[in-house]
Image (cartoon, rainbow, N blue to C red; front, side, top):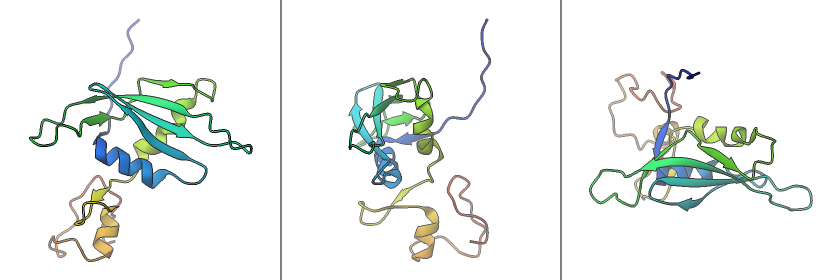
Length: 146
């Protein structure tokens, strides 16, 4: 039997994925890009137990080259996991990585080091677009009239 599938999948640049991991990480829940090859990106998730044991799980995502000149070391990562290595959740470890798929869209600021949401950029007054037009960003977390 062949299954059917018709879905939208999120694709992000490796640098965006690193920023997303940093934004989502906390003292308890940690996301890090642990390995990058020409066709795969490994993201590690750990939630240390009360004894400090990490017991990380690793999600493997497919990736492909950027295609932009000068951006060869920043592949595009398809956030549709191929497998979870060291699954601590009895086959449900993929759920630990769902926050990456649901993460707000992040944009790099003028200093190239700080990543922010569109709402944060607008609030700080650094959005150079005309404010009398409706917001055309359909991917980020900005709501009309925000």
